[in-house]
Length: 288
Image (cartoon, rainbow, N blue to C red; front, side, top):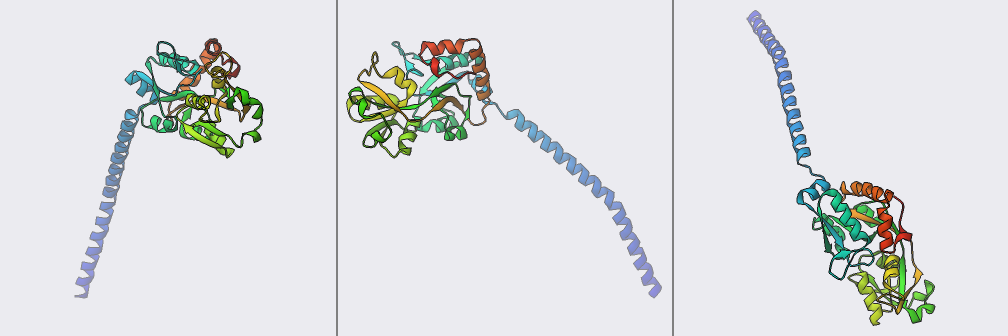
């Protein structure tokens, strides 16, 4: 009886060993096959994802139009007597769109919502004398800087001698474009201000006497106020900072690098300088 039990135990052990030895290769093969299948599936998925991913440039070229977000801002973007958008930025945007093989469309935006407009794809870029602030650089894919600028104080010309220093501005109420570099400057100085829709409106507020002063871009001030302009009774006094302009696209957009290359080409052949002279901003131009 003991021998039988021992024999049965021995046979059982042998069967278990054989089963174990036989199953190991099978398990390895199955695991290998599963791994190969998974890898193939992953590769297919990655390929599919890459195939479906579309660059921003391809997106714009496919729809056939570059939608440019702007505000009315002479000499960068403004309308001529026939209602057509012109200006240093507008003319460059037209030329860039042509280089991409698409039409250009200008859309007036709420400057405070420019990032939302970009991300929502209601516009493809912000090209309107946009200051390259830290917030802008963090939220957008930006071009290289192409123009120098500053924020300057606008006051009635007959009061200009009273406001020649930052300290002299303390009791004034300013009109500033909401979401602009001008708003950031007056806020940092703890000055009283009224937000308005754009810089043109800020000038109107000062001319009407509803605000004491405004802060706008120096390039706009040079074109819009003083003798020979529509605001001959206004002038600019204190400069509050120095800054640079750039063009903003959606974060990660390949259009920013395409524009950098375009800037380099039109700077090299003199086109950028010629356009700058047309609109009186040649002194602010940055070499590309």
